[in-house]
Image (cartoon, rainbow, N blue to C red; front, side):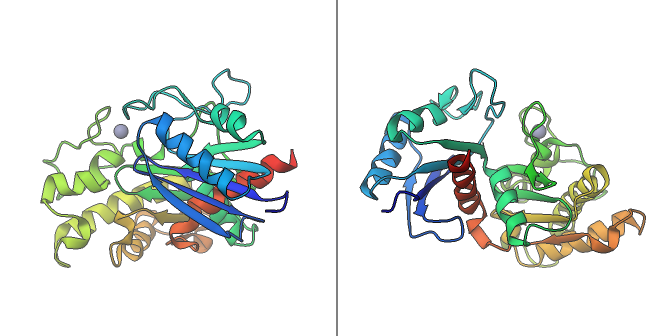
Length: 290
Ligand code: ZN
């Protein structure tokens, strides 16, 4: 491999996706490994990069929570995750030592937002990326930069207004009960109706209820940070018609009020399921250039 080979990791709770290539839009090889304990998983990832001939920089797009403050002692760590063995895991430190190259780091959803923003041509207003799956997470790119604040956003934990047909279910978030994730993630759907959204009949009220909650989150993003686009990925979002239902419901909720509303878009990922790994490649490129 030439010296300018970028390496990328999309670190998830069930699998790690690894990739190498000369630029973010050109992945030459990829490999998926199951997430086990950190020692085993990280060693297998490092060995795969070595087997590709090494990389000149690495980007990591990780599940969270993570420490993104570059001045913090634990920058690059997964912090207080309940996932057994992974709390206080020094991801960046491990790969810095194992590969000896610069490492870029962000959340999986911020990386996905970066890649989706680049796929627009990088112009226009800001972009939010929501993933609706086992949990609900969101990343934001404003003025071309991922948004961090004192930590990363946790858009899945806002409280939506209850749908009138969904007043009994308590929600499953261990911290909040009926926050967005507690009401609309995949396990919350199964907890109330016994099936995934795509398995429910087309006339089941669950479709409108879940679309309403996600639409409320989109409206909150349009109203609070004035993004132009909300991109919705994740397993639940692959339910046929869900993204279109969300877009239609968000227009109803706004009722023509927000400035810029004519430009608002709620869409499926342009990059399909490659948003996260492409974003990780972008993090590697940025790390190589600093
Ligand atoms: Zn919550």
